[in-house]
Amino acid sequence: MIIAFVAIRGIKFFVKCFLLSILAFTCSAWSQSAYEESISGDLSDDANAPTLVTSSQTTITVAFTTDREGLDRDIFTVEVPAGFELSGIVLDDYNSNYPENLGFVGFSSGSVLNADPVLPTAAGLLGWYLPDEFDVGQDLFLEMGQAPGAIGYDEPLPSGFYTFWAQETSDSNDEWVLSVVLSPVDVTCEADVNGNGAVDFPDLIQLLSAFGPCASCDEDLDESGSVDFNDLISMLSFWGPC
Ligand SMILES: [Ca+2]
Ligand SMILES: [Ca+2]
Ligand SMILES: [Ca+2]
Ligand SMILES: [Ca+2]
Image (cartoon, rainbow, N blue to C red; front, side, top):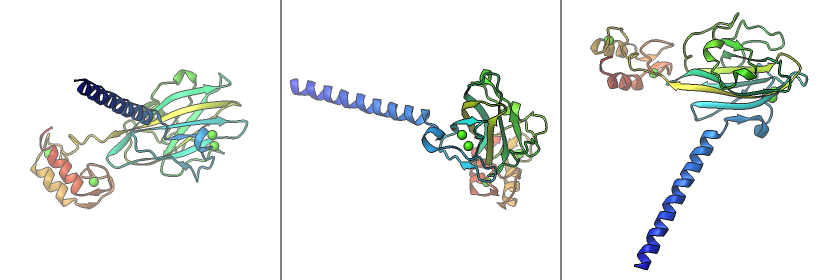
């Protein structure tokens, strides 16, 4: 009897420890930034050689400081993998030692910055924004796409590389935490490639006849750059009215 009681207590203790360790791992996994300058060093200042920030998570968080007097601007690249799109740019935190300061954050497509930070121009940027401390917690993505002089956009951006550029607009030292948010591509109705309201036989014929490498064509449902078996599986999984 006593032995059984001790055994049950032992099992309970083990289960409790196991669950707590899973919880601790989950918490640390979610709170972890993809890149922290305080751990990994200053992000690149070079538009042609940005720091590549890699992450297996769909929220890519980057923590860094910029300093106009010290000429520290920060330029980094993230990859949006096939099957995902860029859908958010959230300012998780922003602290300036000069409260009237506006920061600057902009981004371009590609693995180098398509703009010259020394001669600032928005011409090659997809979007940009001038944040202050009141913007903390905001998703700046859609507003950045409306910025004057930029290429612009009004919906999530497709898979590929994107390069971000952040700096100050006045003499200040600022702390930033910025998250690039990725979402899975919704292929529910994208599989209806002829747009007749159903994923059906004509769509299948259209997809099969487009098989092979293909730059931004409708039949490449996961935007991987080619129409292939994955697109076929995806289409079949959405068969029927949509
Ligand atoms: Ca920095
Ligand atoms: Ca830097
Ligand atoms: Ca159809
Ligand atoms: Ca594909």
